[in-house]
Length: 170
Image (cartoon, rainbow, N blue to C red):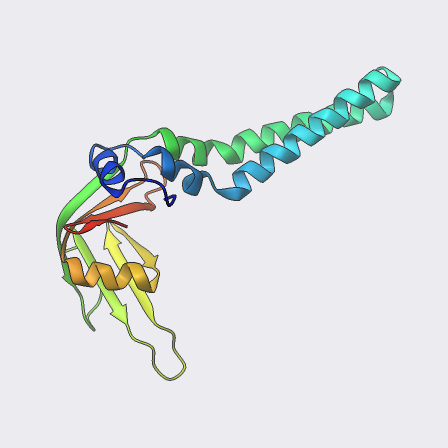
């Protein structure tokens, strides 16, 4: 979420089942755009090769390679693009703290905090929608403080888009 986005707008959009425009960049990520920049460069190289030498063997190889790169970019970018367009799944309810017990699907929203110990790192886990998601410490502490919340999951991948609590969205 970008800094200039109103948290109320983001929460309203997420609870309505769609991504806010400020969240699309985080869903697509830098790798998505890097792939498409590479595709544009490769297509430009293929066009220059064809213009300079006609359809020679090297130009044909450049065109074939560009076609393969475009096909792979479409294949692997389709999921991220579909996540931006698909409706969000909203799971709401009280957050259950599993404590030292195992994480189960008995509750719609559950979390577990494993404190830092000798030889271990601090870990926050969120269990929602049949999947366990790792959270950073800031999100985990807010999750423990809120208790009643709605978790918005991306439609196709099931990743956490946002967590909407009584005190805002994060």
